Image (cartoon, rainbow over all chains, first blue to last red; front, side, top):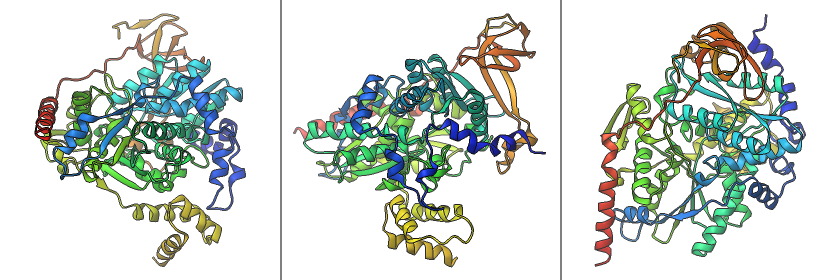
Length: 470
Length: 108
């Protein structure tokens, strides 16, 4: 007999169709390809309309700040003529404390417009706070499903804080133990309530981030006379990279280099009960960043609107210790006390700025709120309590789940490149594996794969031939 | 956070329940996770009187009625900022000194 889990999962298609507020089937072109731009524009909102919806929702128009002290710090150890100007878009100034308000405002707008009584989202991150806050403003009910505890009922302090803020905004928070069946329970709740699934990965949610890219391009033009030469984006599920890059493109900032950045958590299993509390970052890390880049359609929607490989020009990783160091530096040098996860891109930006000439401009496109639990001090205290070694030294000695090394000097902060060719190959392998056995990619599929991985059709054909030869 | 052990109707409480027993969990999850039931906690207004550990129904903020075992009465939040880590406290002092020294030299 089928278990309750199996029974619910068997009804996934039917439940999601009612809960998604749109029909994804009409964008499918083949077992591999789909009409991405068609899906992205199906909601019918222009960028101007999105910005106007967000202004009415109290979202966006956050300050763009130049970090002169941090810039001079980098210049103090960069080679002569090097040390780019560093800027930050202070997204923590949004109502619920992060750029996720931009996504949530669009999900809630769609939910209200389509007459849903409430929304449900599965998230342990800032998105839950954003959905809860926007739902409160719109008078909608809100349920947030959170992976909060390990089997001992010990909660990561960052996630426990996220439970608190969601409840502060009037959401019902279902706190769960570790496991991918979070999705199964979300389906049960969608079925029970008839609410909208406010997925992080819907076209309207990801389109909501385009305003961030557009704003920062406009603000940099006003401030420096040109769009930024580089934008650094904290990368997890891919929405931040995708939406920001699309917004930059819409403003004509086609030469801006888009750099994604994640905290290196390699070696830790995201669904492991024992590993769950051995990480100090619950998002912005490679545990999401790499799998979502190489197979975006693992998300809770039939086709993910966040497709980061389309947009990233570089992908950097930094260590947990480097991000904690930079979080403290930002607070003490710039008077900007912000959450560590959002400072992942800041750590990468310090390393990147050092490589670049002084006339280059690097924009870190987000910050997030901080507070009890969601603070680098509390994360370090928690890590120690879980038996993780915390010490000062060379961050190259960092070992996820075992040792957090806090740099002794800023010149020790060195972001590392992830090879994008390897990620593209991995994506294409996944796309072939998800097609029916024996399916031969058509020329249209090859063009789609090239677009989806930001490479050429001939490069895709080479990779396919290489994978087939194995 | 209170030491109450009995709740009354209308109290703000938390209940705990099992969503999936260990044998009903998804296949393909890591062994350590698969060995445990999938548990959940939710807060709401008590629909009856109960002792800690007793079965109880609550009405949540979304208006759902959820049945579980009473795990806490007037649940609060106890997460903190922690204490200053020794590896962190000197960073601000050191970096301010470096920036000042750089500017003094650049201005020479």
